[in-house]
Length: 288
Ligand SMILES: O=C(O)CCC(=O)C(=O)O
Image 1: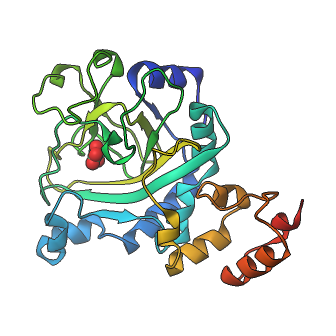
Image 2 (image 1 turned 90 degrees about the vertical axis):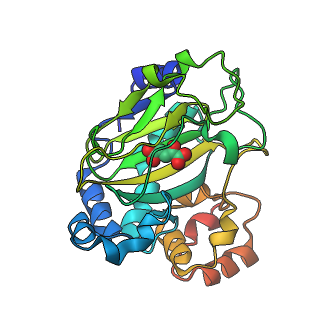
Image 3 (image 1 turned 180 degrees about the vertical axis):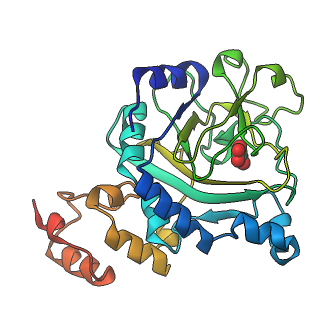
């Protein structure tokens, strides 16, 4: 994924940027196939919406939290292009992946419309600091083509909001409606935005459409008051173990797993972690 200086500048000025064709086509198509383990194919959904009634209970009903049951979807979350881009945007290699979700939406299932809001509410205990290089980055990996009819995210470029206080977090008026931009793109594009960017989810404007996205949140490791997921809480699931075993040490470190060379590693921890995660290559952790 090529992150150009123009993308970084746009993130600084406008709070968002889209990188087209960011995901390797083979990885993308395997991830797209894997997502049918989590949600119905559009043809199946629209053939019998009643059979999928739970998807109509809330606009968040199509959300699934990482780890997913299929490695082909999990590995998209930590794919090298995405991580390289996030490192460049955040200006550090010491990144924390603090949330990942898959989200399926279908025309008419439920009202997906949202008011303009900032995402920081459940990503930090305080508010974003404008005069700071610490970036909380949201990446939406588009797993399906998103046109204006496909419930795109609408963002308000930061330059229009710069003097607005972060509170209230949700704008109850449509004060920024004339400045908003629809984020569209083909499957395999990645839409990045920051938690200090005003945006909203929207509704489909045509029947029979669906939108599938993978959301990955990343930030520089360090601030104690930011984050969202305590990964050890997920660590008893079967998918977690399989995912950790299949990841590289660099990918695991995104979740807080001790990196090779960390003082955590000694004979006992290498033996026991190797037993906990049967099949994990422990050699990198033996290197001092
Ligand atoms: O799904 C989208 O396009 C945006 C969703 C969003 O902004 C949210 O749920 O906070």
